[in-house]
Image (cartoon, rainbow, N blue to C red):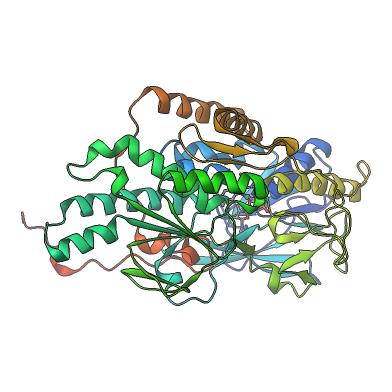
Length: 480
Ligand SMILES: Cc1cc2nc3c(=O)[nH]c(=O)nc-3n(C[C@H](O)[C@H](O)[C@H](O)COP(=O)(O)OP(=O)(O)OC[C@H]3O[C@@H](n4cnc5c(N)ncnc54)[C@H](O)[C@@H]3O)c2cc1C
């Protein structure tokens, strides 16, 4: 350790107290957070040292990201402070790059704003893997460069600014043949993936633009062409056929151009080409075509199912003593669903499951340290909710299909209940209240560089790009 207590590059950080076992949790999202919360409550102070490795100092409540992208909810209000909520836990900012199962150590890569990167090694006696998932990109030409995901705060803040900028630029285009074509492209938004990410983003942004359309002199919300594309035959398949049909009808009634059973063939700076041969001129491609488990899982050399780490019903990893896994990265058998001809399905990758799996993982790790008894994970799905902007929503709480204002009330109540911090709940509730009584925010902050919002960079699959060098012209102060 350095004099200040911060580890030096490559240094092995041993246990804080060698007599106590060290529990290292990889990922401070839903599964990791709830595991630590349970461990913190269950274990006596000298029972174990608790460590979490996460690239940020907060849990991101991702179900409200579409509301961040529309500025209805302030970005910080969906970020739950890990330090405040987990006072017994040591937070190591960084990303686990490698897990050495034999040596019981993880290598953590830490980057800082100036582009310097260092690594440290952490020893563990118990390891909980909860690194979540990343946006599925597919090897489609142009998607990595031009597609924008919605899985991090950086992406949500960028998307909001980008949309405002496109409308500003469209408003300023000259009324010429070329100007009209450019204006139409800037006023077209293509969202790929009609699951909750793509559908909620399109539906909520459409409503938001209606509320701020007076910002522009000759552009109105109805001028924007929304294209929602999915290879599946339905929207919001997570909510079942009936609600999916209702959501589809609502979107089409609102003028959203929903194109089903079609995918993207290629993308360039000015257009998206679909697999049915259509070309859509646009400057905005929102990529919400599902998720894949975090690539860390594939580097472990352990059995996977559809890329997710195979675990036992008690969330322990077979063949890796002292290791557990939960959340989007783990293939957890769904004991609440009967086994079919292909065996028992895995629990779906939702926050609802990740949170509850985290709690069970924490309980079972505590049991392995001699506190309490282990139990298998079993949870009956409470149903999903989708906010479609304005007073529109679809929800299926406990299997009961709801639409309209009642579904909206259930959706908001559910989010307030599921946000794991009272100060965050109050701030989000106040954001919703202000949204109804004050004019909506419509300013562009432009705090995210377009390169940093690329899916691979925003989601940590590539290192951040170093800042562009300052050219002599820019460096020269004309007042000199
Ligand atoms: C826009 C959107 C809307 C959604 N809406 C809903 C909804 O309405 N209902 C619902 O149930 N679910 C919803 N989900 C899904 C839900 O967010 C996920 O299922 C849930 O977050 C999974 O929890 P997790 O703990 O597995 O992963 P996460 O919550 O993603 O946490 C993983 C954590 O690990 C960190 N991490 C990643 N790699 C590393 C590494 N190498 N080392 C250390 N840390 C790492 C990540 O930064 C992150 O903090 C939504 C998701 C999105 C993107």
